[in-house]
Length: 150
Image 1 (cartoon, one colour):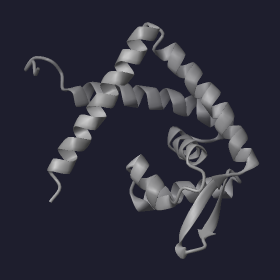
Image 2 (image 1 turned 90 degrees about the vertical axis):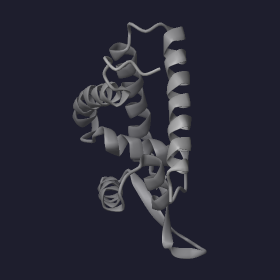
Image 3 (image 1 turned 180 degrees about the vertical axis):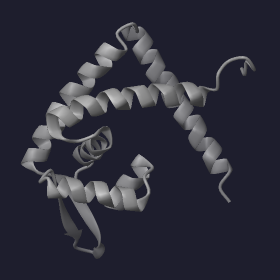
């Protein structure tokens, strides 16, 4: 499995991530004045209406301070709203505004288009296979993390 002459998987993944995010930031900043991280927050709030900041932070693997800054920025821009949990005032539920929904929708078009362009050399079958393998990698990593928690 491990070829000692091959680059580490984490190196390749980091390179892909860095190049992709840099490209995405260029397009998203031009269209909305937002970066990839803010669009990810919008995407998850869209996919999980009423999500709490804590659950959102867990999904994004972001520290509390950075997540708070992202949420405040999106709220100031009128893209998301916060509403208190009726059972626990310490928790706030997040939702997209109408403007946030429009930005999310347009962001999805831009993002999906960028993926098609950047990875055009992969066939549909390759793309599906890659996602299947990456899903398995995430499951393996989750199992590893769980076994190393103390």
